[in-house]
Every structure is written in C-alpha cells, then in structure tokens.
Length: 632
Image 1 (tube, rainbow, N blue to C red):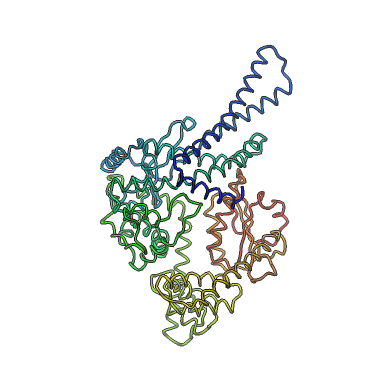
Image 2: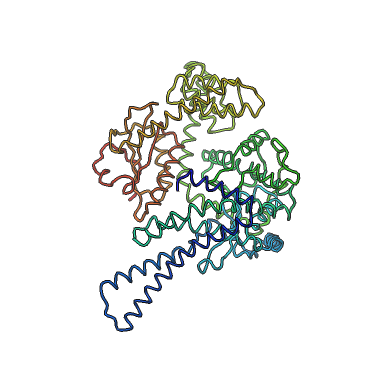
C-alpha cells in the first residue's frame, strides 16, 4: 500500500469513527482478531504437522528425507508464529523508585489509580526525558502485563504536584475500565505488528518470507483502521484527567508542558553546553529544577506557544496537537486566537521523591556523563579557543591599529553567541557594512531576526537569494518564516512579495531535489577526491562518530558534481561493528545523517554502511578517502 492509499484509507476510517463509533470499534476489534487468528493458525498448522510426523513414526512409518524437510518447515512455521505472539520489552532507561523511599508520591498515585479504575503499578521509574508514560510489559503471550510508570525528571522539575498528577491521570486514562482495555489492547497490538513486520523483513527464511508477506499486507491496513481509535483515546484520556483535577488544571498543565518542553529542548541544552568552558564535569539533573522554575522571558514563551499553535495534526503521531486538545477540554468551546500564557507552577514535584532524590539525581548525572564525557571535554576546548579568539579580536577592535575584516567580525559574533546571551547583531552589522553580500553574515542576521518580523529581513534575504545560488532554498525557507512571523505580529506585507517568495521556494525546492537525485545516482566511489576540511570540522565529525558505539571505522570522501545549485558533496563510508542487521544499519546511517546535517559541514552529504549500502571490497580499493575513526 502506497502512502496516498494509506492516508485515504485512514481518512475514511476517521469519518466512520465519527459517524458510527460503536460499529467502527467492532470493526477494529474484528480486524485485530483476524491478525492474531492468522498467526495462531500458522502456529496450529506447524504444531499439527509435527504431531502428524510423530504419529506417523509411532505407527511404524519409515523415516525419509521428506519428513526431515517437512519437520523443519513445521518447526519454522511454529517458531515464526510464536514470535508474532511475543512483544519484546526493553526496560526503561532510568532509576527505579520504591514506595519506601517516596511514600507521599506513591500514596497520591494509588488515589489516582483507584479513582480511574486502572490496574496496579508494578514499578515506577524516574527517567531523564521530559515525559510521562505508562508502559505495559506483556507476559504469557500478552495474556497478562506488568505496568511501568515512567516519570521524567525534567517534567518533575517543571510542574507543581497537582499539574503533574493531572498528567499521570491522563496516562492512567489509557487503561481505564472496560472501554480502556480495548484501546490499550489495540495500542499493544499496533506495536506488536509494527515490530513483527520488521522481524519478518529481517529474516531470510522462507517461512518468515511468507508470514512477512501477510504482515506487509495486514499491518498498513490495521494501522489505518485503528488510528482514529488511538487518537480518540487521547481525547478520552484528557477528559479523565479533567474529571479528576478539573479542566483548568488539565489545560494549564498542557500549556506549561508545551512551553517548557520547548525551552528544555532548545534553550536549556544550549545554555548547559556553554558551561563546558568553565566546568570540568556538570551536575546536570541536580541543577535542572532551578533552571526550569526560573522560566523564560514572556516574549519567548509567547513565541513558543505560537509555534505550538501553528502545528498541524498529522498521521505520524496519534497524539492530537495542543490546540485540538485544549478545545476538547473547553466546556464552551475554545476561544479564537492564542490562549493566555499559563500561570507558572508554584514549585516542582521533586520533593515528593523523598530520600531518593539525591540518589536518583546522582545516578542520572553519572549516566549522562558516561555518554557525553568526551564530547563535553572537546566542546569545552572549542569554547575556550573561541573565548581567547574573541578577547583577541575585542582588544584589536578597541586599539584600532589593525582594523578587523568582515570574517573576523563574523567570528567574533559567532563566539559571542556561543559563549553568552548577548545579542551579536551589532557585530554582524559591522561585518555586513564591510561585505554587503557576505552569505554567512546575511544568513545569520536573517535567521536571528526573522522570528521577530524585522522588516530588514526582507532586504537581507533578497541579497542572499539574488547573489548566492547555493543559498536560494534557505533564503526562501527563511522568507516563509519571516512572513509568517509578520502575519502573527499583524504586520501587512505586500501580497506580491508573498507570492514572489512562495514561487521562489517552489523553484528552489525543485532545483534542490534535482541536484540531490543526481548526487544519489552517482556511485559513492566515482569522481571522489580527498576532502579539504578544517581542524574544527574534523574534530566535530569525529566527535559525532565516537558517540555511536556501533561505529568501528569511518571515512569521508568528497565527490565532484556538475549540478545546480553548486555545492560540495560528501559521502561517509561507515563500518559497523559485527552483528548488525539491515534494519540497524539503516538506523545507524539515518542517525549519523541527521547528526552530520546539523554540523558545520559545508555541503550535502550521505552515509553509506559497508555491507549494506556499499560493498566492503570497494573500500579496500578506494584511496581517496579521509580516515575519521578507527576503533580496534
């Protein structure tokens, strides 16, 4: 089933869920049972075949080669079917909290459970994520479950107890009563079939190939059929939360999470990594409560809320967007426009961890440090070099004996942004006065001021678009953000200007897509030369590679292409450690691609895993690659 057909089927089922909800739920149940019935039928056929062979031998039948092959086939069928009835469970990353350590918290959780009518909790985990969830661990082929509540330390640090408990009530709402049992079972079934499809795709056995064909037909249809039920269950879980704590508390919790989660992902980490210049080893989780409770500037919060409100519901996530969730909680309907900023929480919930608070903070800090120690030290060195360079440039600018050139003003601005909260705009403007068409200066200024709807952004982007072909798509993309911000700030831009930039974005996207296709078509060993990269760029790339434990060795080559827009093209050759599957190789390539794309690498890139995307023998005869990592 292609993507368009999947979306069309999904929309039809959404409509059916609204028009005839009970009939729709019965269809979902029947189709879910069909999937399990097919797997059980395979198991019974395999078992029946083995029993038949055993009976044949017991009756004195002569064994033959056909019996061996039939027996192996039946065993394979039985094993593959039993795989489909078992959903693997990975323990959460975090620390277990006990009732003895935090009696007040567990007492509150038990009260919520009793009011919702949910199942018992078997374990409570404190995790490093800004999240809260209840995860069910299947046992006995899914006939019973162990329930794990995961509470993210950042969320505990961000919300006062009442708002946090409203979030927990939402999670319990997914497991409520008889109605909730169907939804929870459907959720587990969706997860099981997603994993089962991947399992069968990875297997090379004929039996798995046959079952994989069924899974490939069944899962997209089951996903499209059950999606509306999964999304409606999110609304019902919100209503459970509102019944227990009131619509106002539930809504305020959603708003505060939407803002503080963005601040945590964007601002907190940026400021945290800045400390690498001054601290040998940070106390990340111990210091987090003060950071989240201080909050952010109201202007920043308003922009964050506006960004969240502009998000549209999509079919990649069953969670509704914030605007729709608030509308579902509003008794008289949601008022038009942005809601008011939520009143900040009066405190945090970490105090309810009791005597375990210091232990868990230390454990989370230790786990983070184990993963990021090398990156922290390398980043600290980079920031110290930037700081020294910024001081040198500042002294030269004050002395006036040796005027700074545009690139030096740009370097100073980048250092200021990396090292402090100061606005580097004056330094960027000095650079622009010396080099009015400098692409990086124009980009930095436009990216910084587009969200503020600064009218100067239009001229900067015009210069970028007209004079730098390789920056055309980025200029058009920034222009869309700038025009959206202007509209949000009630600034009227000429309609012809909006039409012009929309057309430019369409044209530049088409050109970028054509150039990318040419790059992808080129074999990774063709037209290759050793790349010329700076020391800082190489250190950054090596740091990103060393974060991946699966990487045993990696090289990079630059390929010369005659395409428009003109840009450098890099291919990374990666050797994974033994034992990888096709799926894990693809996932590794995707993670590295995303990491490299966010680096300072000056051009397009792709990642090829040896043995999966390119033959290992090609690497042995490719002499134009630059070695980045080699683990013994």
